[in-house]
Length: 308
Image (tube, rainbow, N blue to C red; front, side, top):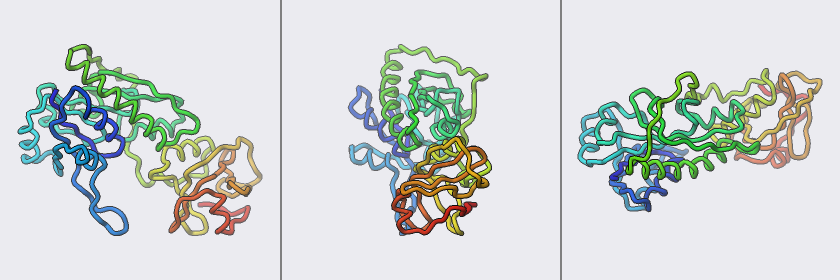
C-alpha cells in the first residue's frame, strides 16, 4: 500500500522506522513545521521530520490542515491510506482523501483513555497494565472501529518516559501487522464499547502543581505520569522545585502535609495527607535535574521546612 505517514514526536519515530523496510511504500511524511525552542529560540524540527529526512523520505510540513493548500498537497500524493501516530486531529475531508481512509495508533486499549494523554493518565490513575490500539479514524476523536490491540504491562518502576519508550516499540510492530492484515483483508473492524469509554485530556500546567493535601500514593503516581515531562512541581523557599523520582512510605510523621519530615543522604521525605512521599530526584529552579544526594550537597534543607 502507498502510505502517507503523519506524526510529530519521538513516540512516532519508532513506527516510521518500522514501516520503512516493510512491504508498504511511504510516499510522504506529514509533520508540523519547525518551532522556536530553547533559550536561544532557535528553530527546531520535529523528531519525525528529522527521521524522515535521514531516511531520504519526502516530507510535507503542514501548518493548517484546514487550508485549501494543505488539502490539495495531500490530494496530489494519491495515497492508499494515511497512517497517523501522535499527530493532530484530521478534518473530515482530509480523512476522506485516501481510498482506504486513515488509521491511528493510540496509546491505550480503546475505548479506555480517549484523548491526548493516554499513557500519562494510565500512570496517574495507578494502572498495572495498558496497551495500544490501531483503529479507523472518524471525525469524532478516538471513536472509530478497532482494528488490532496489544496489552502492555506497567511495571512499578515505570514512569511516562520509560513506558512511552516501551509502548512505542510495541506499537510499531502492531502498526505494521495492522497494515499487512488490512492489505489482505484479514481484519474485521469492531465498534468500540461506549460503556467502557474514559477520557485522557491534555495535561495543563495547573495540573502539574502538587497538592500536598492528597495521599502519598496518589502523588507518587502523579510524579510517574508526568516524568520526565512536564514534571510535577512545588515551591521550596520561594523557588520552584520539580520532582522526578519518588517512593511511598505508608506510615505518617507528626508533621502536617507538605512539610519535610525526614532527610536522608539520598532522599527527602515529605508528609502528605496520608503517608510520606520519598523524593530521590529533583530539579530546583535555575538548576539541572539531579539526584537528591547531589542536591543536598549544595542546598541547606532542614526538617520542618514546608513546601507550598
